[in-house]
Length: 236
Ligand SMILES: Nc1ncnc2c1ncn2[C@@H]1O[C@H](COP(=O)(O)OP(=O)(O)O)[C@@H](O)[C@H]1O
Ligand SMILES: [Mg+2]
Image: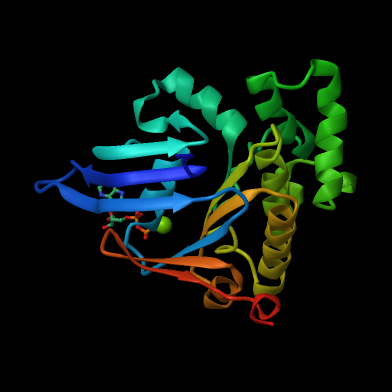
């Protein structure tokens, strides 16, 4: 049996802070195949960020298995995790998280330096190609603070693509953008899916949630709905 690109089995996350432990994920099972565009929706506090942090290995589960691109993420040590993440999964955050003292170009090169998947002399050219793909080539040598929010998020997407990972994980990537800019960033994600990337995106935006092919509704630490949108083309 082939495993899905993302395979979560009976995933439990209990936070130990405070007086009483709090279980934010209550035995989640989820499989995502290559090429899917998955939206994660749900109220604030329902467990969406916790779920995405399990997939990216940013945080560790209390129980269950996380297998992503064949790697047992729950069992990797910090070093293994960082190497695996760099090659396998590009992460995009709500507040961009570009390094403020590096230029846009340097931000995109950083993950390449870390993973050493591309030869040093290829990295500048590759970063420029990625910045062209997100229409930021003319901003390459500026600091992030000189860019608009939408431009910074597109730079963050270029950085996420640095090592050509099969998966992009995004936690409310449009949450800090106006609707027109949000639409442009979403359009970029749609294009990446068309090019073969697999995307898992948490969103608060109902309109965007309607546009992803598969949406997962998270409520109180459980996936309560897993919905496939049938496109007009498929209906015909
Ligand atoms: N580090 C943490 N320590 C304790 N509780 C946490 C921590 N992170 C999240 N939680 C709790 O877990 C629940 C789910 O949080 P989160 O995954 O951030 O939800 P969402 O992203 O859907 O808003 C919330 O009740 C939150 O307060
Ligand atoms: Mg969240």
